[in-house]
Image 1 (cartoon, rainbow, N blue to C red):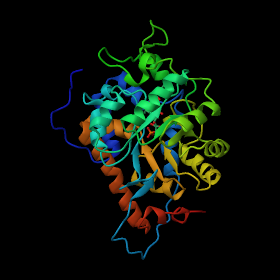
Image 2 (image 1 turned 45 degrees about the horizontal axis):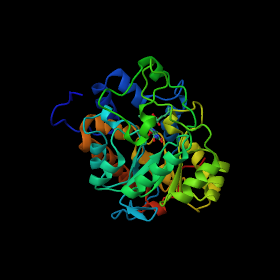
Image 3 (image 1 turned 30 degrees about the vertical axis):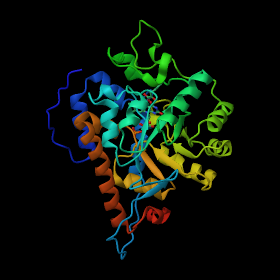
Image 4 (image 1 turned 90 degrees about the vertical axis):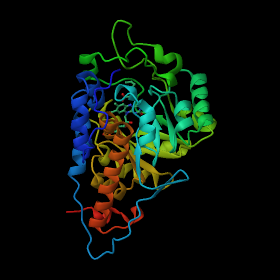
Length: 360
Ligand SMILES: Cc1cc2nc3c(=O)[nH]c(=O)nc-3n(C[C@H](O)[C@H](O)[C@H](O)COP(=O)(O)O)c2cc1C
Ligand SMILES: CCCCCCC(=O)C(=O)O
């Protein structure tokens, strides 16, 4: 793929600037893959909009000269609580692909997607920061076992199992655009499944590699065999969260897949409090979906999340500026988080409780 970007692009200032810059660079098909949600995209919009509806209650007369944004996650101390969510096919967005993302994410956790266009082992050999591997279960227990084993052997610090995609959702933009991987790109982590197409005549970036029969029994086997902590991604219901803790997961990601699978599910920030209550502190709860400002990060922490993940914003950064763009997107969010903490009168994430949220 030729790269239309100037060699040294100016770095935009906010995540919305990055979104505009990225969308201006991408064709409609790749832009649709990035931005798209399921069906009428209500849940995608709600994810961001519901953050705006939560008001802050800033406390005055606090010494906020020293701020601590660090977060402990599965035995690793991170400088800040902003992780990179798993997203597929990074070589569509920038010639550096997942290598550029890993370089930009060096100070935090990058969750590498099963749908990556770079092999996990190649990334792990060069990555400066901690990598987790995200698994889309396929209907082949041996393949799943080998994939997880390979990722852990290569250095994955955790396995994230995506539970919210037993089948594909309604992705109208994909139907309209017929995006497929260009020649020369593949999904190495999907093995033989990466070569499958839903219909050889129909172009599609997706592959019929999902396991519609995946149940608690299969997850329990992965937990037992992984040799690394297993984190469940795609949880909205409190009762599911309680079941997952009983199954031995080491963490839960409250996520609706960026609103990409089932439209009209609630915004993740609305689902978070119920999950946090059900989990009762037994494992960390993380959240993704609609994080666009440092205040969003702070609100999620105040409602009980240990950390957050960003999906589309990292891809905007990758598209507009490669590794520098990814790094800057994370820096912008972190800087905004620090400002929000200082202005709310909280000096550490542990001190950010629901009292900094305005209650009527
Ligand atoms: C282009 C794109 C590809 C994605 N690919 C995956 C994936 O391979 N596996 C997965 O579990 N989630 C995937 N997701 C969902 C993200 O991990 C995450 O849940 C979502 O993007 C969070 O919402 P946000 O984009 O508003 O930050 C993808 C999201 C996008 C936008
Ligand atoms: C729709 C079936 C597989 C999706 C894999 C990538 C992904 O999670 C996403 O695009 O979202």
